[in-house]
Length: 552
Image (cartoon, rainbow, N blue to C red; front, side):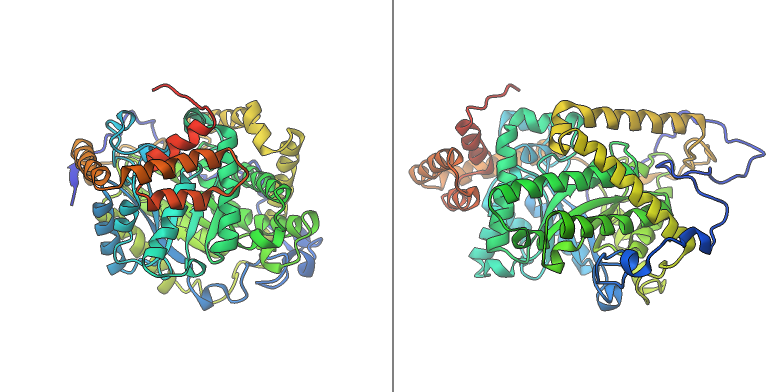
């Protein structure tokens, strides 16, 4: 195992307040006032049939499936990706042997921006934040021992790179004789990703906006027609939440973004019920337990009404707000990192009680490094304990009817809809990103959160309160970037030397030509991969079609 033992630094600690054992304030992090006691009169206006219904029925407040976890537990995912495809595959096999039910594949920075591991821009970053993938052969190595029709893999890869990863996934199935209509899993497909800040600016720096949006729509069209069991992730709300926005803002911005994408798909001529049933979201579950439960319940209700009333969807599957969840990254601390196990467990239970479809826990050491095997096993064991020992899955939606939960759900719904209205006034989420409005909202939320931490209004145990205890050293993952880069460069040299270069060049020329035409790019990219083109070469051809240049 590539691990080393370190003593985390606690940094400068604020003194713990004395004489005040009041646990929390009177408002949720989103600013919703919480009363001391809730009673029947707090839900007197609740229409149980219209607002709640039964699980699996409109408006899906109580869950999108009738029997929820009594029928099948949520998919228990672990995020995996580092170094080479072979090392990532080794970690996957270890975790599946321990009972993992699915995985999230994370790629390194060069891959995520459309560059091969041996390009100059990749120096120092190969395999550091995820696995390096440049060729179809690389994806096959990751999936060694795992068939895409039996193992649910979530490809945490955004446009424009997701167009190539989807083509790779399809070809992995093709080479194994698996019909595309049997492929399962999820392809992330959020063209705006974090929607602001450095990550978004970096994406825009390396690929044209319109090209990214076009590939996003191509993915939905192709998947809907050719891979009907594959989910496509319309919005990565998780990364947005980690910028510092509130639960209300996370929900509002992500739902507004989905509306934008759906409208563009309809303008392309796609029927709403041809693509909406497989749309999915990727959400964060923060530390404020009941606010997060209410958020997911409210999102299901809002989405169902929007799909049926605004978009005219007729298929009940189109009304379902389905989401995978990761425990919040922005609640992890580098101080006293083992405390993060408690945080992730609380967030997991909130996600489960709210009725989500899959969960991935952030590891306790992620503030210091990529997760070690031990940390990821702890994440898996936590999910197994909650699922098999606690009994909270015995009945569907056990929190339904709680005066507090139902009242808070109503308030969350109202606030989310209000913020969505603000986005509409900006011309939609895409325009709000382009104008800088969303960046301003995020900056304001981030500053407010930091002030609350520094003032003590917000307590983070081990950081600004109850701090200063003795630290226990933990093992962290060792980065071997130089070694990985050398191995990858050698592999790519051999790969290119063994191919028919004339055939590859012709395929890349087709990619460049097709990018300037109104055709779906996924089959074109698949042809280029069959001709042994690399991910970086395919992206270079697509950029060339736009006359897009960049400096690095």
